[in-house]
Length: 310
Image (cartoon, rainbow, N blue to C red):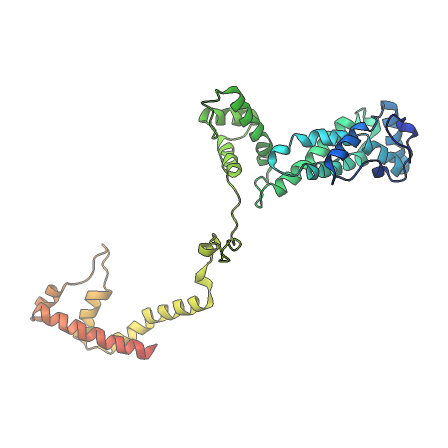
């Protein structure tokens, strides 16, 4: 294998083009190696691109990729603020570079470096969106545009502001500026700012240091209404509230039934209940205490009827 340092790229012949650079596991060594790889001249780039296009020459593809690895390193550095491993960003960018090389047309009058930039960024963007949070924060084109511009624009606002007065949250004026420059609604800026300022919460957290299960949202997000036991109990309550009460009322004499219905079951259109103890006492010509005694006795009788019905 020929050492690429100082050698003519056109004369470089490598059975495995990737063997000239170390693994991404040693990031410093990798970056140092790709920065030493020689750049292609326009003529060399055109020659290799035509070989790839016309004869599917894999060695030519490798040389096009190798000579642009430093571009991927440069682009990936701009996305380190998202907290993802630099090596992973480079790896995804390399995938974009290889896609660009495969699709590159040397007859379009564009250098590969300009053409590949879009593909490298696209792969890095997709990786960030999938891995920055457990829940994807941007799905539409407008949301993606906001996601990748919001951080840089916020930093620009901070750089322009007094250190003592700058705020972490956006002001109304800043939101309006962002919405205008990115051609989106101000509500969309606010929504994306809220999404990016939040964090992931584990629904079912791991046990704490004492070995006890941690408390998480899963504890109060569970839908108990569809648990089998709860469903059976709910159905039984519904039956008792309809057929059961109707059956229990049939066991009462007419006066007791009317007292119970007026006191407990009747609801007027205005939300008020039925007759009071004194109203019923006046109707039946007895004391209010006597009506109360009849009511208590009727309720006991209904309770026994409901228990038998259940």
